[in-house]
Image (cartoon, rainbow, N blue to C red; front, side):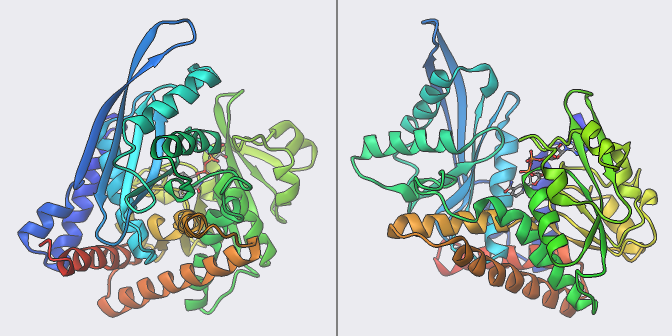
Length: 428
Ligand code: NAD
């Protein structure tokens, strides 16, 4: 399917339908879980700095809240669609359920190019978003967070508007706040570290540990850098990382066969995760084409950049030495590539389990905000590791018992938990 034809909501429903077949869900439950339970579509009129008015379309959708308040980010994207938000809200439901945190799945978005708006216009847009929604979000209802192109400053404007409208301090209404203003220690590291907590467990089932293994990583942004740091701290060797270079409008792979120095590379990287390849070359790294990250002779591949990166067209480039693909990005493996990887004996650890450290830490932020109490970074990461490892162990156990893939097992656990909650509440 050409990328332009890709409809994420169709893909999410297709995945759900396969799980529903395996779990033998009844028709009403299938119908209920195959689309958001609530969709809010609204318009935000915005007074621009030049005095004109523009109208921005916005969404907030809760796919399911049987296990707890909705949870999910707010995306700012000029081509945002209702179907993208629907799909992402559904995937959030499964992600929260697989790591067993008491939250449901939600997502929001505003159709806008945020970079084209001045800071004051951005602030008014954020406040307008909350004014359109404030009766339908809240610490015990639906809890937004940053996502594509939205950041901690946007979250604080939204929280401030919500508190002004409700007349109460309610920092648990939103997560992704700056540390010192209700944000959680450890959030920066959480997703990347979570990737390696899960990887460590998987390697344990193979009688191996991170020390002595090698990895190639696609991406060098927020997730990839902390995954690489943790992997290296545990004695693994990161042989290659890749990144997008905005100035050259192409991607590069940066390689050092005796192992990259992650802190050194991070020092040459901008806030968007682009490594300065001239500096890297001067420091002795090889600079290769961007897609060469996939053909490295390593034990582990960690795609941590984009969706749809491992496809039927490039599976053959993967070295025979690779035994594990740890999906740190969302949707990096195309569904058609999955069986080809299985035939080659490569174990794929699925995205919504591997990268759930981020939402788990958002849940910790919400708990801290709701109780007006703060944990140290050590406390946060000390809670994250057992949560992630226990989620992995449940998935691994079920995959072994049912003779299915880790992806199928993760879906089975998540959907079963949500369907049980819906059923026990008496909804269906
Ligand atoms: P980021 O924007 O910080 O980093 C993205 C990285 O990918 C950058 O290094 C960029 O240069 C690189 N990249 C972009 N295009 C590339 C290409 N063609 N080839 C090679 N590298 C390329 O993003 P992030 O927050 O690290 O997120 C990465 C992935 O993880 C995304 O799929 C995101 O949805 C997912 N994710 C992130 C979080 C989180 O907490 N940040 C949580 C869950 C899932």
